[in-house]
Image (cartoon, rainbow, N blue to C red; front, top):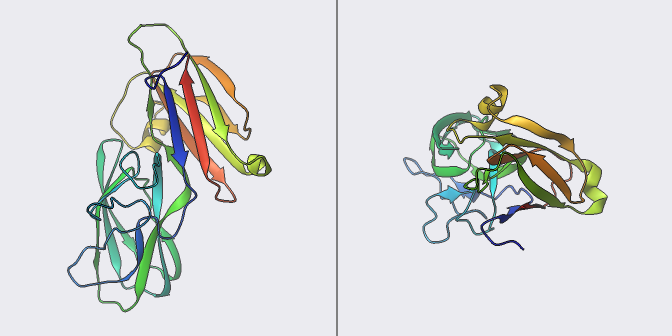
Length: 227
């Protein structure tokens, strides 16, 4: 039998060009209105990808800036956060195309802009990234933890979705890719493309699921049970 303390369901909505901000004309000296699908409907002032959002999502993603016009003279400044680390990132505007941030974000404080341009821009999210970091109950001091993971994916898309499952013993602030490169997170399973439930048994207190491929931009659900 399991309880909510050892069962977690993480939702990954399909990405959209309006996830962060609906198409809008830039206003001088005014941050963009964060009124997209992920927005906090009470304030429209921030985006929480992990918990308090209108899509009940648990994701860490890059941002896409899209415009049908030439906005290359504009510079956007993203004020956000990933895994406890504040990030300020500058990104040039699109030119009848989409430009993508370098960083993944689990929280957006605000997005500002500079440069005088005419046109409108929308802000969405990319279709790969990370699920929100999962924490296990290790108070019983077991040497290994047994857990089961089930991915809910349309069988037709099975081969088009791949992901890495990584573990860590202790939580540490830092950008996920940096922590992976430094071997702080160790690989448990690589590039899975299967939908059925599988069991894992390893020494880990934290579980990080990295979506490395989602060709058809499908919604995903990860069901995680600590046994």
